[in-house]
Image 1 (cartoon, one colour):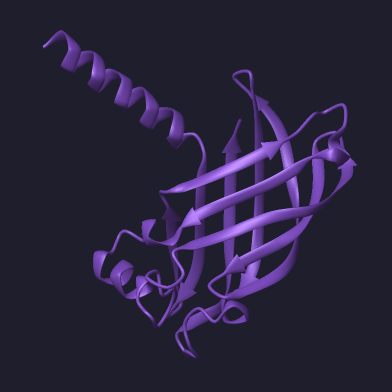
Image 2 (cartoon, helix red, strand yellow):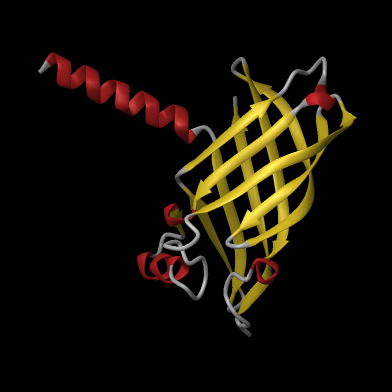
Length: 168
């Protein structure tokens, strides 16, 4: 029993640590803002505040982990009309250049791949400290149709915003 309690405590602690980093999004659908998240993702950040230009950022999101708090919608988003998770299970990002804007802000350029399409993107990363960890926050607006996610729709917006909050 003691071992079970210890294992459950360790699992809860690991869940709390994972929950500190998030990949979320929002998109308009039929005039309403629909929020969502991806629960399964991995990031790799190489950052030295003394040498910020040498930073490198990469990440992989398991698309099937999408959650919009609506099981039927999530199932539809996983199918061939949208993400085609059986064919394209991951979205990836790999930085190609980092520019220093200030001590607390970087401009990161890189390649974002969703399904079979890779696009160059540039976004600002805000850097802060929290409980002895370095925190990276960013948002990136993309056009879902650039990546062939969902067809034409008069109710679903083409542009959506991704938000990343990563604690290292």
